[in-house]
Amino acid sequence: MHIAKSIGNISAISYIYHTAAWGKTDQPDFMNQVVKVASNIEPEGVLQGILAIEKKLGRERIEKWAARTIDIDILFYDLMIINHHNLIIPHPFLQERAFALAPLAELAPNLEHPILKQTISTLLANLASDLAVRKLAN
Image (tube, rainbow, N blue to C red; front, top):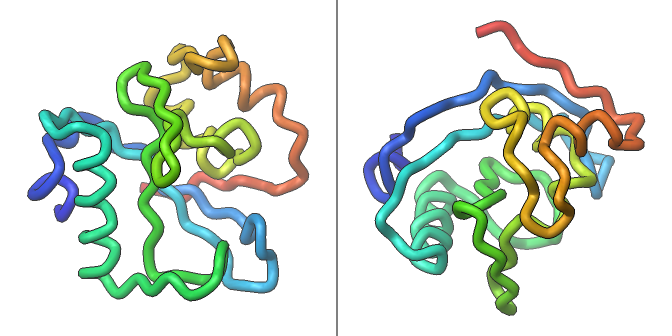
């Protein structure tokens, strides 16, 4: 609801996926979902909107990869490649994270990563990860 109100029109929503924590593993499990958004806002503006939503929903940035109420990432912005100090698109860890690739593959399996030149479904199939990703019932 917050994304649709402040960033853009949501055109697709994946199922929710459940995984064990990644990065810092001594915390509660993750719930992940991907939404496809059409926006007129430039990437930096989208980032600022996301940060405002996270803050509104109680996110506090205390420790990297620590437990949090919400974490919204920009995985792609069209096929742009952005490498700024506070914004990297495509998301720099996407190809290492089954919990992001699985819901993204649900919405855009044939989307080609503009740097790696592989589709999302290929990245997911080739991912060497022992972190189980489980799609939850709708």
